[in-house]
Amino acid sequence: MRALITGGAGVVGRALVEELLLRQVEVRVLTLPGDALAKTLLPSEVEIFYGDVTDYNSIRPAFDNIDVVYHLAAILLSTKDGEFDRINLGGTMNVVSAIQDAGIHRLLYVSSISVTYPVLTPYGKSKLAGEKVVKNSELDWTIVRPTLVVGHGGGVEYNMYARYVSRFPFYFLPGGGKSRKIPVCSGDLVKGIAAAGLEERAIGKTYALAGSRELSMAEMAQCILRQNKKRGLMIPMPWWVCKKLALLKNFIGGKRVSAEQALAGFLYDAVPSVEDAKKDLNYHPKSPF
Image (cartoon, rainbow, N blue to C red):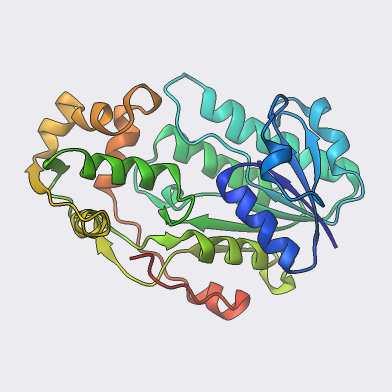
């Protein structure tokens, strides 16, 4: 079995490489041209191809002689108009075309739990549009939707939140941090992703990949502070103040994130069931806290 991982030199991608190698899968990675660190960060037995998913001709050779594609390459943060659609949607369209042209049948698409929010951010819209491309491809597809990723090499969103609540002796939380999440340990996440791409029962299905413990954003902040042996005073902030001043954008992400995206995670719950993943993928996550 030979797998191609797009975005395989990223944080989650590198962990997935290790997991697939443990499962005796040969691994090829597609990473951006000019990524000088890929060769030093990835195991020596991993084959590396360079290409940009927004440029079909640059990625097409990476798909030859591959059995399954894990499509991770995406952009999470941007304030540039059209960037999410260009990379997350357009890149997925190119990947699907390359899979079809190479005669591959199996595709694992890493989406996001944010596609289930009642109001979508531009990022969420681009990932949901990518899901539709995958579902209409006539490939043997599986989609996974990770929640907030925590742990060694944890996700960008969690790391920004952890830095934010730990930075000062106090921190503001929109609505008092009442929105609820089920954060997932990065190690459990990559096991779920790996299994979903290899398991025949997963074909044509969509799985949420979450942890085992439901927490409010306020409770999560306290967990973060305890882990870092710090104390902090949470100051609830009314929604109308947050939306008007967009303070969280400046405190959390600065220029990399829009005010809309900074607030979305505080506004909506993300507490999906993982029962289908447990049944089909032998997925038994623990809490990262």
